[in-house]
Structure formats: structure tokens, C-alpha cells
Amino acid sequence: MIDAHVHLLGTGAGGTACWLRRRRSHRTLERVMLREIGLRVEDLEGDFDRLYVDRLLALVREAGLKHILLLAQEIVYDEDGKPRPDEATSYVPNDYVLALARRHPEFVPAVSIHPARPDALEELEKCLAGGAAVMKCLPMCQNIDPALPRYRRFWERMAEAGLPLLAHTGGERVLPVVRPDLADPRVLAAPLAIGVTVIAAHCGTVGGSRRGMLPEFLDMLAKHPRLYGDVSAIAFPGKVRCVRRVLALGVVERILHGSDFPVPVQPFWAWAGGAIALRDWWRFRRMRNPFARDIAWKRAAGFPDAVFTRVEQIWRRVAT
Image 1 (cartoon, one colour):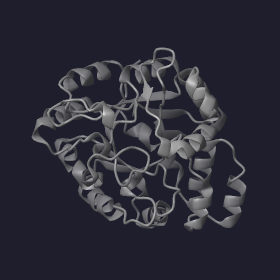
Image 2: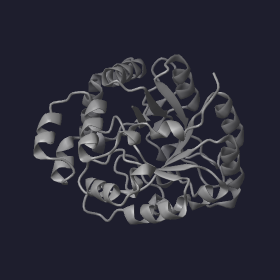
Image 3: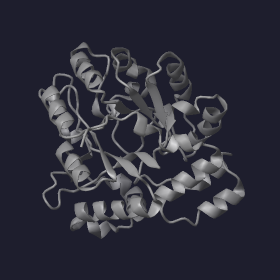
């Protein structure tokens, strides 16, 4: 099985060039996420980057996963290409993700490049040469309007290279939001029209009581055969309701599994939302491995085996 949505984090310890800006309002979430990894808050002041990778590898191997799609993290840019690092909370460079993927066969690299960067095409070529399998972005958080004409050549090169785009859709509660309007899955129409295969992360769902964008995502599926969705971080209040709709509407052949690790996901919400039975929640709640736990409740909900391997048919393959 393959997890198609796993975040890499780092503080820069050991010369990784990562950085992490901790926010007081997220201290509770920070503790919960670190507990999911098997680390402590105190580890953030030490050799955190190595500890994170070591724990990630241990959990992946323990869960029996073949691969995980490991995500880099770009900063925010203006549309004219001026960097706005103060509006980002984390950064994970492409070089670091590509280097880890060369060392560990479990890791498949997903790079992150803002198309407004003055060197965006140069960085894209470097990442393609380095083995990039996917390109990840968060339009609403990174200020990326895919429809801007100046980005066309960037999408064209991705299409030529067969490099898919994994783009965040729907709500966001962890990272700062720069352009809320860009959460709509319909903004992905431009790269799709150019020929890029696109994975709409979270299928446009929104947590809590707010209206999600699942209907817009489903409408896009009908219009664009190159569009897929992933069900990462779907076991949350409000979001989990989409599970039964996706399974009932016959679109599951366009769905991929992802966990959104280290975002903490608990099967309780899958039971509360009616996706799994009480006996399943009682059984899964005792599972300590977050990767295995996420797969277990999704299989119990009715997702077929193909959902857990499909990304391997989509990502860019690199000859070794």
C-alpha cells in the first residue's frame, strides 16, 4: 500500500535548510502532532530533523507500506515573484526531499515550487532531473492562482514531463490562508486544460460546520478525466460525511489514499460521522501506528484495495 500525502517537517537541525515557525495558538495541536510521530516538544530544540525522519521510517515500515509520497513545502510569493516568507509557517526545500528519496526507497519525492518564482522553470528542471514524482502546492496558502497567464509555460512543462500536480482544496486550519477564494477545486481547471494530471487533496472538503466544496469537486471530476482526489485528513467533523457520498456515487476509481501525516486523525470521527461501525472504532482506537490506523478505518468504511495503490499509476516514473 502507498500513502500519497505525507508531510516532511524540519527545524534546520543538521543543516537541512528547513525551518519551522511555531505559533502560540497552535501549541496544543503541536503537542498532539508530535505525539503522533512519537516525539516530544523538547525534541524541537535538538536534532529534530533526524529524529523526525527516523520515526517516519520506523512507522512506515511497521505499517507495511511500500511507499509514501513525501512532500516538500514552498513559501509564499507575490504574483510578481517577490518572496513573502513572513506569511509562511514552515519551509522544506526540494533538495532535502530529493536527497532523502535517494537514500530511502520508501520515500517518493513530491517537490513544491511556486510558479511565480523568477527561477520557477529552472527549479522545475532541476527537480525533474533529481527524480521528482509529483509537484505539491497549496493555492490558498501560497498565493497561487493557477489561471494566471504567466504560469502557463510552467504548467505546460509539467504536462510535457508527465509530472502530476497535488493541490490542496477545501478548508485549511493549520497553515495561514492568504487567498481563501483559491480553496475552490474549480481553480485547477487551467492546468487540467493544459494537460496536467491533477490530484485535488481532500476532495474540497472543509472541517466543522462550514459548507465544503465536495459538490464542486464532483462536478470537476465529470468534466476532467485527468482529475483525481485524495482522502487525506478526511476523518474530521464535517469532512467524514463525504466518505459515503464518494463511495455511493461511483467515483471511487478516481480516489487515492493519503493520511496527511502528521496531522492527527482519529477513527472516532469516522464512527461519529457514520462511516464505520462502533465495533470498528473500538478496535481501531487501540492502534498506535497512525498509518496503519488510517488505512484500517478506510478499508472498514468500504474503500477498495485499488484506492491504496492507485497513485503509483499516476505519479511520474523515473528510470533508475
